[in-house]
Length: 177
Image 1 (tube, helix red, strand yellow):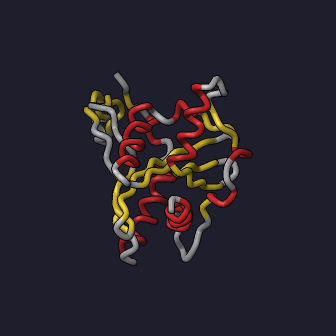
Image 2 (tube, rainbow, N blue to C red):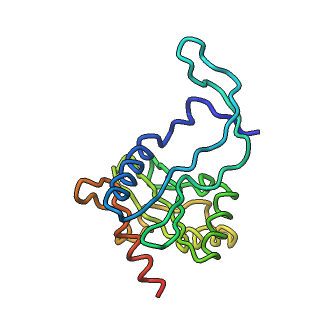
């Protein structure tokens, strides 16, 4: 059974930035994307602060975000990486499977990866994620390196939006035909 502890807050700054971005997109009527809460059952609660200090995950979650962008269904997960090597074990099988099935239903799945030491954000289309997953089956290392990434998919801040993922999403859509 998976449990949550203080390490469960990793990525919270990235998620705050994405939540802010999604709010800006909603205000500008560009997209309607929401954070999907992970269902947990508390085990321990700090009586002084009323904060949950330990809990277990009720079931496997899907992805962090789901919504629609100009009529296109999207889902994505936010990940952080503190080195130039991203371990594929950070993508859970149930998340990968959900993204795959979402794509099969004509939706767009992707990751937003924050390379914390570089302070850079990367938009990874599902097809790229699938490539890395498939090459593991061929005996390749269970990771990918920063140097392998498509330079066109790095996310640039624009007009006060720090995680402006709509531009690489647009390029992703155009590349699909």
